[in-house]
Every structure is written in structure tokens, then in C-alpha cells.
Length: 74
Image 1: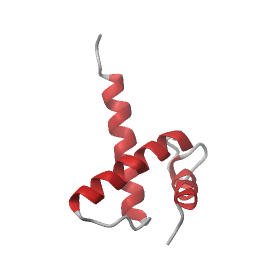
Image 2: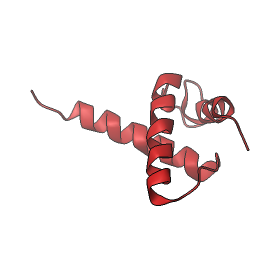
Image 3: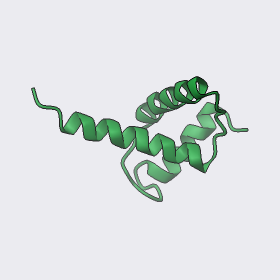
Image 4: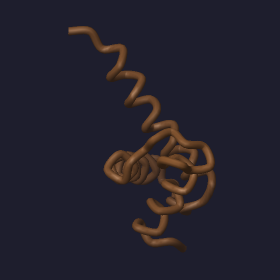
């Protein structure tokens, strides 16, 4: 099992600047998304595995947050 820091690095290799699927994510976004994911999984009685499925959940959480903030009108 990966530590949180290792998982964040793993996500950065995919979605960080110059990552495999560069989405320009930063470690702060990933840390926040990781907290959200762990709370969701805990509420569902599911386990955090630090695998590719969890990495994709992180991607979706961050993209949803970005999309929501871009489409918010004041």
C-alpha cells in the first residue's frame, strides 16, 4: 500500500505538469481531492486502495471542482 505522499506523487506523474495526461494539477488540489475521496469511500464503507481507480476518482473530483468554479456566476 502506498502512503498518501506516494499516491500524490503517483497522481502528479499522470495529471501534473508534463504528466502523462497533463491536466496541470498541483499537489494542493490532489491533497484536497484525496481528503474528499477518503471521506466518500468511508461513508460508503469502501476502502481506499491507492490504485488506478482511486487515481481516476481524484481526476474526476478535481475536474468537477474546476468545472463548477468556472461556471459559477456572481
